[in-house]
Length: 108
Image 1 (cartoon, rainbow, N blue to C red):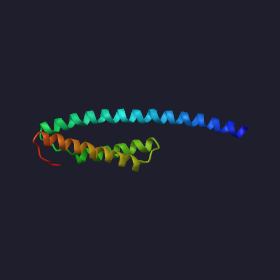
Image 2: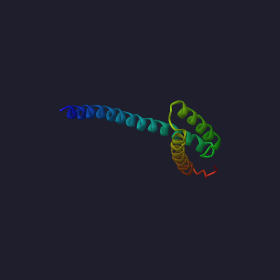
Image 3: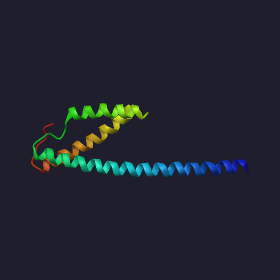
Image 4: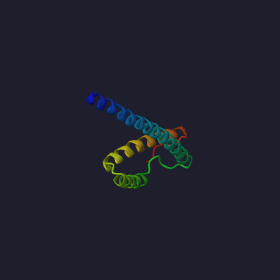
């Protein structure tokens, strides 16, 4: 009987954690969508002014900044850097597509 109650209590706690995780996942998706909305505008601006899709200096600054934020938040900085690199690669790909549709060739 006690074991059944413990198991039922564990399921309730698990459901609460899972609900929080689902909410966080939804927030992440919405935040990524907003980030890409902004980076699309950056890509258009860069293409209109002939600026290169990639900005290695900015990327390095962002990596350093996010690594520090990760450390401060007790998150593995290597994971944070990998995540940022993944996002940045996708942003650059979008910027290259925007530039190509505006007749700009890859320059960085």
